Length: 146
Image (cartoon, rainbow, N blue to C red):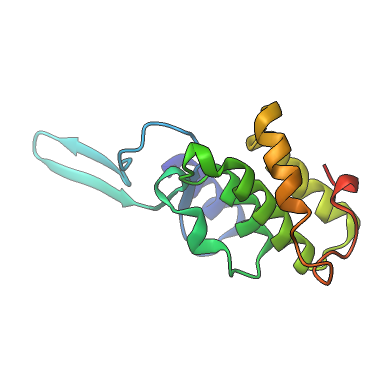
């Protein structure tokens, strides 16, 4: 992280706010958020950065966000295994309400489909949940996006 920070700072000569987004499934423990260089006679560097660790965030906390990135990243958040079809349907419902252009819709729904890949049984539940979404929310059929 420190190397990326230095690289960007040197290239653009602008203040950089360092944030890392971890999208892995495990471990769930909080990752470190600093880089320290110590010598026997003292510390010469303490570089801190912010962490967004998706597997520690609850997807439900992002349902009301009017943000396409939130809709995409919900697919990598803390999800109960039984809720996987519901989460996928809610991600796509949120995307439709945002009224994005087709290219962005396709990109984000593809991310959701890739990272929240459902088995046959989950897919049947997902399709059932899609049928309950308000027709007013549906700008275009979901089948065109994933």
